[in-house]
Amino acid sequence: MLKIEAAKDDRTEKEILEVEEFWGEQAPKYPGWEWVEVPAETRKKVSSYQRMARLQLEAPAIDWRAPETALGVKDAVDGHSHLAGYPSSPKHMEMLEQVLDSAGIKYIINLSLEVYWDEYLREVEEGWLKSRLAKRVVNLTTFDWKLDEPGWVEKACKYLDRARKLNVRGVKVHKALGVDVQTHGKRARLNDTRIKELFGHAGDLGMPIWIHYGDPWMFLMPLEGNERLREITCFPDWHLYAKNFTDRDAWQLHEDFFNLVESTPQTNYNAVHFANYPWDRIDEYFRILERTPNLYSDISGRMAETGRGKWLGHERDNRTAKTRELINRMPHKVIWGTDMLPTDKLYKVWSLYLRTTRKDIDYTFASFYPGQGDWLVDGLGLEKPVLEKFCRDVAKGLLGLD
Image (cartoon, rainbow, N blue to C red; front, side):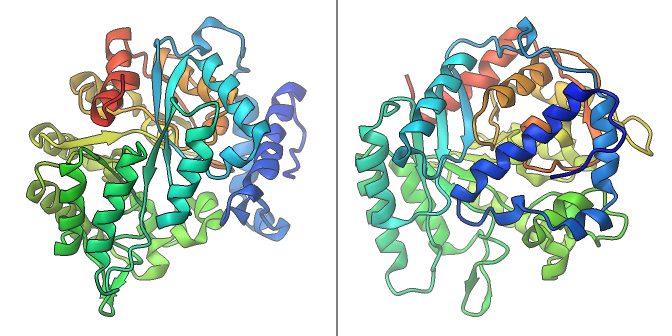
């Protein structure tokens, strides 16, 4: 556990440690999440740990029972979550139901990452569809992206036919496609005709695509001086710079994606995480979003990036003004989601961020441990009509939910 030196507020320190304990308990149940156990030597080298700890202690304590920590949207939809392993654990299913009820969330979108083909369909049929949350957990499937296997596209299209009959509502695309996935010895591209055929078929079935392509621009940069150093240290596979993935490659990825969207007009796309477009050009992305009928975007996992305010060693960012402007301008094109394991505090922090104009919110409970960078966030203060579209109506419309 991270040792907090000279803590001024025992309650806040306890909350910081609670985050680590939560992830330490939960994450090992999910394949590939061994990053929770950060080596002590790494923490010593990355002074960002101590800087963020001090900043968290400076943040105003949150009253978790206050009215503003409620989302305030009837029948809300968490449009981006990962619930691997839940159906096999009655304890976690009961906890999930209680958390959703407490937050006023009717549906949660479960994006599959680890299980493919028949194994995934068994998980849906024998697990989710027989569970107490069968009508509230909305499942999206994914693929292993072995594009060069003979007959892979035909197999994938037939698989989607079967998945749709089990009420699987869409497709989740992992960020490996466009960066790591290979075809004929080269990096696969999103405008590959086989991908277009598969996604076009998904559109014919009324199944939208939740797609994560690329990653934040800081992941393309060297470690030295990188504002996301702590995050990259804990997730070394996210460091695209170390994979020789350049900004030129990233722009090619964006171009390929927009070509894919345009060439499959029957298919709706949610480019998650605001499409990982560089923040200094976010207006450009929203102009593309505005003029592309079948393109949508979610804010999941990006509270820290879109709300960054007080930042150690830097001038205050005040990004919330731009984020508020963008969401207010196009609430019919953006989707709220968390990208996190559901907890009461996760939703309460998101509520503070979305509903209030509070300054210096500690985003720890709404981020992958141990957080994205050494800053706090400021609230957006969105009005209720905008929140209802953003936190409910858009996702329900795309996924055909009641």
